[in-house]
Image (cartoon, rainbow, N blue to C red; front, side, top):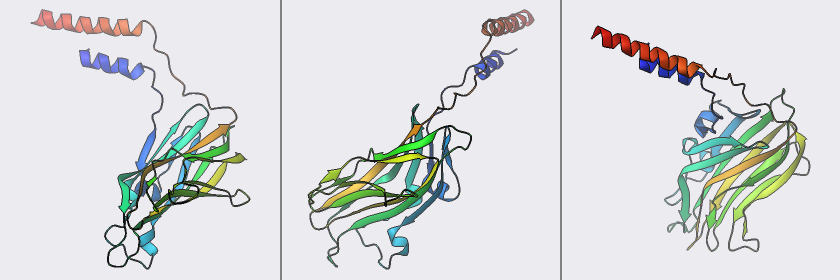
Length: 246
């Protein structure tokens, strides 16, 4: 047995490491892909930029966003699952259009469904919107809003930076979900500026707290204690045969 074949055999039998975070661009998700993290699946993604359907055309200084510029990733702890959106290149707008006097803006809509597997004993207990890097100066505004469909009372999540307003900023917002197994989220991410203002964003995160028993880790087949020694011995025999032939 050649040495590299022996090494391959050992590697194939070693325990698998923990699942890493999943990531994909938003245009792939809009086309029908899903993201699954443990027993939680994110699906039904929809995206639309403000200028796609608006009667207004973008002018220099506005920020048009394409779905291919938004990376969506998921991660998890023992009791939470998170979805993170990262816009690359980051959004940054400033000032107003010199010709029209209208402020510059960015605005896009991001919808998705979160569901816990039917075979899972866990449920969605609460959700937090946060982990964003929104910024704005003067009268500029940058905000992320998600409406939660199916929760009474018009519940929504909102984070924002708005230095010119009384409530200048909100970096985190949490809502109770009361043991749901599937919910739709309708998102609006927007910002605007006037003369001397700036605003922008590059990332934000939605984190779900899960109640109930967590699913067991993937089954790992243990490597027999003597197997590595056996393979090492086989490699040695192969080298000895090659030496005799030489």
